Image (cartoon, rainbow, N blue to C red):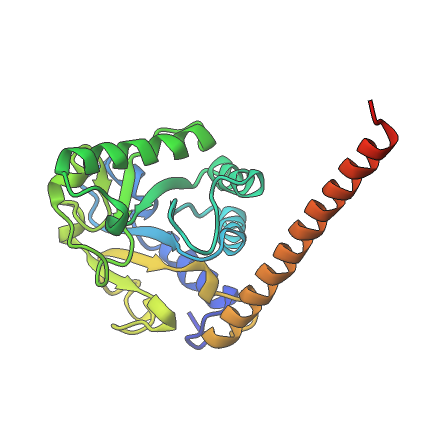
Length: 249
């Protein structure tokens, strides 16, 4: 690995292609369980907090490099609705590439009763199953440092990325807010035998871009999409009234 540490697609793929040729396993959480005795592995996961479009870009880049990972999808995101036709298509496409779709559950939205909360987790996984046609095996908590504390019994029956016996054997690193707290993943790959690497797709760009500019660009795109949706709605109303006027009976 020769390039400098940054949040470019080039560096991202450079590190993971190196890892693919170095470790016994590099891939999604669900497939690691087919062989629990691997001497070295990297669980590669993405928390999709803000943009499914950025998730699709990373999914395509990985697929083109024969890399596969787990994409954790929020059903309570204030930034995207996973159930629109467009976003269901994106989620299905990511799944069809061979990536795993998992549930990114938010404990702030769960009922207080343990049984009811567990049922809601199951209900949310079924929603994703209906989109992908695949069984949801893996889950993980959204913003565990700022949302309600997890009761491990809540996710019984699922493979939780942060509450999993296999994960206790690995080192966890994350690119949260474009900040590798333990240093860039390139400093760990090839040196630590068992890793869990969490990335957030929005931070990675063709050309390294500051997080504030990334968020500003996403915000502007959302505004354009909202304007387009309202224009479509206005056209629908105009057509409706035109039809009423010309078909009074």
